[in-house]
Length: 344
Image 1: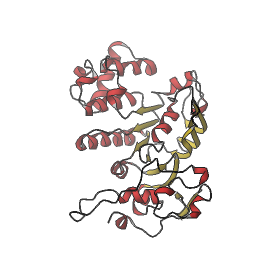
Image 2: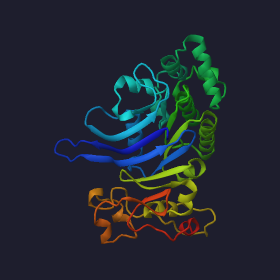
Image 3: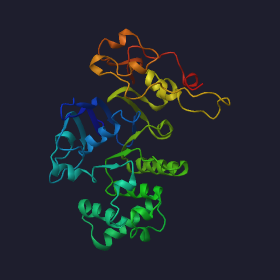
Image 4: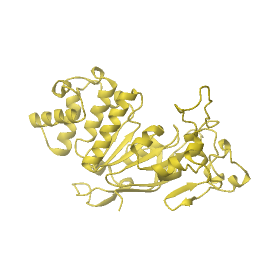
């Protein structure tokens, strides 16, 4: 049984002042296994972060409609949560407060805006230990210093007294990771954790996340648009477009045989160091806003090189045209292209 099973998740933001509602997540389904890394990949605006916020229970209480289910095996129960599998979408505020930080945690995209700018780092780490592990005073401060040291922050005892603006971008991201893993959560969600970091710090952060998964058996849901991160970290990949999963496969299978035209285009637009000098890039034409509603056909049709009238005959279903563990939502899957041909 997977640790997290998301089935037909929908998130709709109600329109106001005569505006129509916006379906940000439109029937997303995927699974995350313990001790494995699962990726959600796609351009900005495809629904990745909204999916994560829905799982964490951090969407606004008003003006938002959620549907589907997200069943998480929380293990032992607590005051507000029963043991075993629970549906995150059906929990009340008390139960979600019990789970956030202890059983499910999230590393946000921008550490500077995620951390409280007027509270020292040590206080922000120890309040998690107080809330979920009952540690206070000197034991809490020692555990907080140990957490900062574990994520590679030098001189952790001194850093506990510093404010977020006194830390570098990489150290702020490490502090967020320390807060997220303070209670050894069963599920860790990382929302673009390497954005705005230089490549050296990116590599260090990814290596740290990989070690946490290997050592603790934590399930990691990696949200990113960086296919380099996917290649180095994820084991199972779900490609999102316009709020739906359009391709789902193992990492090696996806990179070797991208089958949906969107995934095909994402891989084809990656610059290569071994390409001839002056060789042009091959981006996907248009933008994420150039789409149609899924009920009218394939949302990617306006940008697709394989488009024809059949693409507008209703929403395509997820099928397995290549192999049983490789699902694609397309009526014209790309079946005869290898990774070398895609990036040539």
